[in-house]
Each structure stands twice: as C-alpha cells, then as structure tokens.
Length: 96
Image 1 (cartoon, helix red, strand yellow):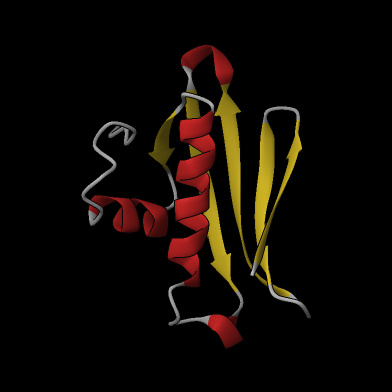
Image 2: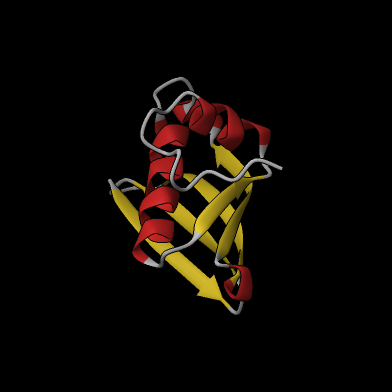
C-alpha cells in the first residue's frame, strides 16, 4: 500500500492505493495560524470496506499532523469515532 499527500494551499487529500487502484481518501484543511488540521471526510471505496483501511488513512493524517506540530479536529464523524477509540492521541485530538 502507498500513501500520497496532494496538498494545495491550505487543503489537501491523502490517498491510499495499492498497485492497481485507489483504496480510499481523506480530505483535510489546515489552519496554520492555529496549528490545526481539520479532517473533513474519509472515504473507502466499497470493495475495500471492512478491512481497516479508513483507520490507516486516519493514522496517516495523525502522522502528518504530528510531523508539523498541528492538532487535529476530526469534523468527519468516522475520523472522530476512530480517534476517540485510540489511546495515544490525547496530545493531538481537539474536541469542539
């Protein structure tokens, strides 16, 4: 599996792919003055659902945010659910 981060201005898309096709994507917006990354949407294509691929995308967004010293606000309900079940994100997770 391979991640690609296509960033444009203050937004971007993290894409997860295998050798043949896209598995899923996560869209985000960055507010650099607030040191914040907002996860807007997580999508996993139907043929890959139920295999934890969405969590892999959220994990990659967490790594990206930590590399840049940003906090994360998961606007997407799926991302919020995943992060609320994680034990090691208290330092980075923003609640409303």
